[in-house]
Image 1 (tube, rainbow, N blue to C red):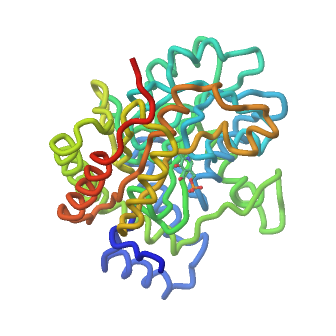
Image 2 (image 1 turned 30 degrees about the vertical axis):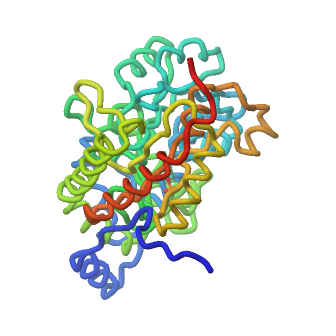
Length: 385
Ligand SMILES: Cc1ncc(COP(=O)(O)O)c(C=O)c1O
């Protein structure tokens, strides 16, 4: 008999306010390209602190349009991390460019900036850092390298709305940045994404390309360039506006749940590797709560733990699997095991625990108790000296 999940891995936080906003839009004739679209864009731009925000139908579309707007194409290389969601590397492949991976820092789990310079070649066009799990990457070092080598910077902030570096929002520091609004994110539009930028040229191209290549003021059946239907409907935008109005409250709720996990794990399972405290000047925006089994445990044990927790009705998952070990990347790009040892080690021992705004403290305690019970019964498979 299948076990029912009693504590889900994630859950959106939808109140009557969001329902009313969506219903109000449904009562208008403007379900797409109506007034909620520019309103949502202006509000995100104001929140992030960029000149422009372009709403799109997903974070993946936002990454794609960043690559296109920067004219990155066949033969070009984009330096990025193998420890991310696959879209952050796929966006280079969409345009026949090559994602060049650089291993991660074992503590922050973001790009190891000390390894980037060695990966730069005459073909490198951009660096694409990901603010993994809502913790900002070392943007100061990345921007310094990019300036020194004449490279663009695309920030994948899909997991990091509200994360800050010296008070400035992550996503707004590079040439362009992206956010994602899938239901597991800090805020949701159902499906959706946003491209943010201070560059007028990138904003203009993104606006055109999301709308079938139409330029501003052009007729519906005129197309200045290759474009897509990457539009976000007014229904989604209405939901996004209502969520953004509650963003501070939602981020605070997530931080509270993370603090409960930190506290319980520190007492009951101190050997578990908890999410790193942010480096000086940085603020994490809590997206997921991912812990690692200590060094010495192997992937099969992590998988057994996931099976055990799921069997107890606790939603959890491996997060992230290595991008370079996905079949596409092994078969088509020649990547393989052993190439990014830090990423592989972290990935093999990582587990995302249930995490969402309204997760009750008692559920956090139940998850930690289940994890602790498993640890008592399972010693590491490998000895580390
Ligand atoms: C780091 C990262 N980049 C890109 C994306 C893609 O966003 P979407 O699912 O909205 O296309 C995600 C979504 O999970 C993500 O976590």
